[in-house]
Length: 255
Ligand SMILES: NC(=O)c1ccc[n+]([C@@H]2O[C@H](COP(=O)([O-])OP(=O)(O)OC[C@H]3O[C@@H](n4cnc5c(N)ncnc54)[C@H](O)[C@@H]3O)[C@@H](O)[C@H]2O)c1
Figure 1 (cartoon, rainbow, N blue to C red):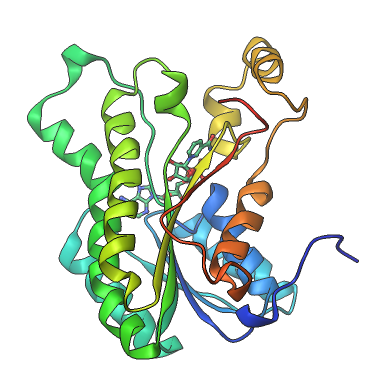
Figure 2 (figure 1 turned 30 degrees about the horizontal axis):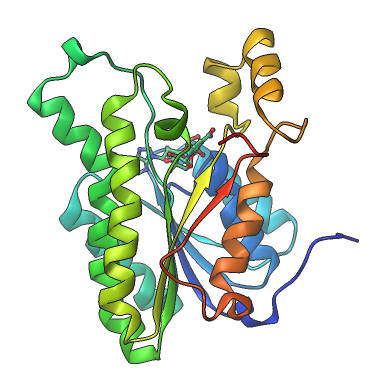
């Protein structure tokens, strides 16, 4: 028996998640499935995404709908979102989770690299919101969760374009919260600290980095994807019905 909350308002709700195939996104997909939500998600990693669907199906939860899609292709992405809505019903929860945190130095960045990093870390979120907003409005409202990052607060080295995009996520969230608030559409940002996803473990979690992280956090425990997914559930549920234009930092007290 879980000691964590369940949300009756999420049962049967249609939720869309970008980058839901692995990492934090996969945990978000699984957490919404546990709530009885109808989840659609996109990812470029087809193997991981299909394995996730199989895992959720094996648990006899509501099976999510996976649509392979590269979110850098805005037109294809908008078609994918509309396809999910056609199959699962009006999307009233949108989670803009997908991103890519490859390292880069100032001298390596070309205009094409800049555009591609902005496309994968910021642009898709804006156009996903543009796609779902009209039907959310007709449905009487919705909740949109955008992903930022602590990395621009902590000044993590060699991530400047990613950090520019993740700082912009906050501005986009607040601006659109104002524009869409009259239609009862809520927008909030989530700022994860350092989350121990498989990608982070494979690429960057050394014993030294782990120790430094714990030293920097107030709470002496490393964070995992479900710690973020549970915040996303709350922001999607009616429990947060008058919360909008905010940024929620889940980092164990790092910044
Ligand atoms: N893990 C962390 O420590 C951390 C820290 C701060 C912020 N975040 C943010 O949290 C969110 C999730 O991060 P994560 O660590 O799970 O990332 P991740 O890299 O582990 O997973 C991202 C997912 O997005 C998918 N994706 C990447 N490019 C795509 C594309 N072009 N089209 C479709 N799908 C694509 C990947 O295949 C993957 O499944 C991101 O917005 C990230 O910036 C993570």
